[in-house]
Image (cartoon, rainbow, N blue to C red; front, side):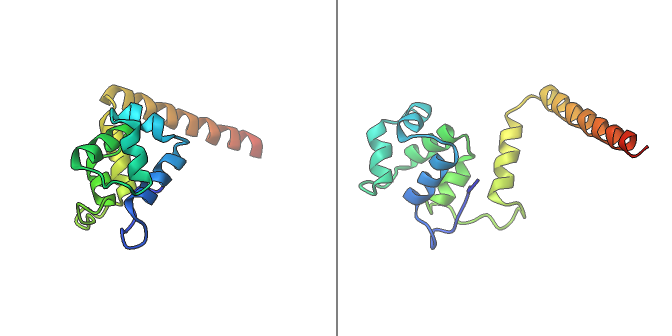
Length: 127
């Protein structure tokens, strides 16, 4: 999934279209999820309009991305070079932060159980 790209190689409408394509999402669906009029989203995609900051924040909400990622894609914020994490990794951390600790623990436990089951099957297959 393309999360961030240098604005020297791709502009915001292209980045936004790639985000929509990655999610099999239409401008209409993004407008519903973001609370912005479909015409606003369409004019941004067609380069008829530059997005306002409040629209970028709404787009982040609709795409379920950290606001910083969208603001960087729009060229409003510079690339984050201090954290050592890619924007994709930051997006995953943001998504995880929205889930309760108990749910995260249950997911990790299920993944560990599945991995242990696979190890046990491999051991039995070798006998």
